[in-house]
Image (cartoon, rainbow, N blue to C red):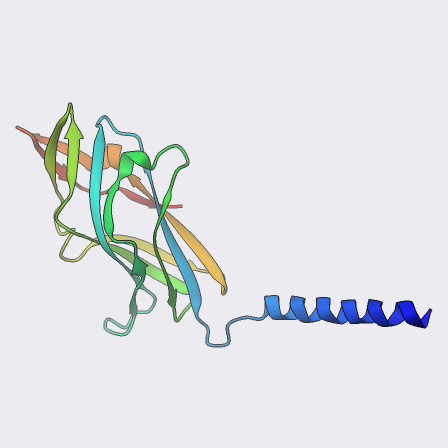
Length: 173
């Protein structure tokens, strides 16, 4: 009986230590946040958006209240992100578990491909202040993920003569 008792107690102790270590919260109050991107269908062959930076507002302090996430900067074809497909565009740690706003700062290589022709996609204020998404959400303290649905069908406006504007319709899921 003693021979069985010692190994059982040892295994129970190890299991308890593992469970306590896994449930331990970050004492600094930091939260790891992942930001993902997806899209709704549109009548085009490609809708390419040049994402350069993802910024997160976590407090009302205009200077100290922002964090820049590690962004997978690049050109994303939104039409490849449909029907349940998404992609990770940024991840990082913020010193709070509350997200007030997300900004997607865009570059200048935004295009749309229609009937085999590629046209520039003009985005008002996309590269200056970024595309703003109000969040006001409390996150889990260990890891949380936000999915941004970029609705290309509602966002793209043909002005005429091969001129297209993007007035983003972004939904947080």
